[in-house]
Image 1 (tube, helix red, strand yellow):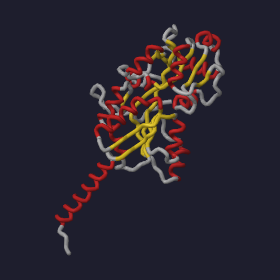
Image 2: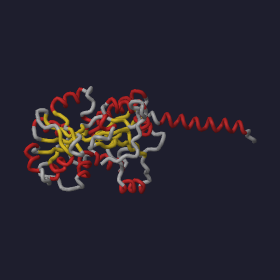
Image 3: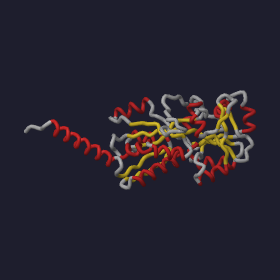
Image 4: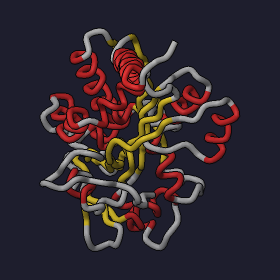
Length: 305
């Protein structure tokens, strides 16, 4: 039986259209549990809630955890999708490749570490040099710094914040003045009650000034300004991220194990869309793909510690 060229074209169009429709349906249908760093839990929860609202046949639920565990669960196929503050290492990519997994990774925005102290603390700024001095217990200015800053507390080990700082001081041992709490909430509570303490948390928990949880937290603490050169000081904010002024900023990544057309990829597409990027902007962070003052933001290439 002969098939005319016109009929062949019609058949191919219908065939691929059906395939695209099935992919589109799969990308917005079903249940998905994904991992998200607890430092970006507000944004992750908002994105998931809105996606599930717009696509009624989907249910997207975040599971919050620390970076080390999220990456481990992703590699071991316990989570198909994660949001965190780093790309995979060369060794992790090789391990995934050996398991026949080539992850889809994309940057969805910029965030940063926030250095916090008690509301009534008279000091409101610190340089990166002095911060490293406190972290390592080394430096000519250590004695003077100890009169102002008694302790430095993290929001836990295994976090993106802890890894960032560890990399910044080139894996040197931490000084006896540094210790950790189990959660960001415990870290914030301790700092608010102990003037002279610096806390390190994710700015994502403090960024959205319209969020009632953020409002209550900001009543108890203040965010320190940070300087790279000892002259110009900046707080974490959309503008300082946009201008690459804030010394402790970093990328926000989404990583998926699943193929194109999956619910995980559908969710990534939503977060990367104008609607999803607007959630990041309104949440006080810096979106990667949303027009900002009539400019289209492109964050590649860039160098961030």
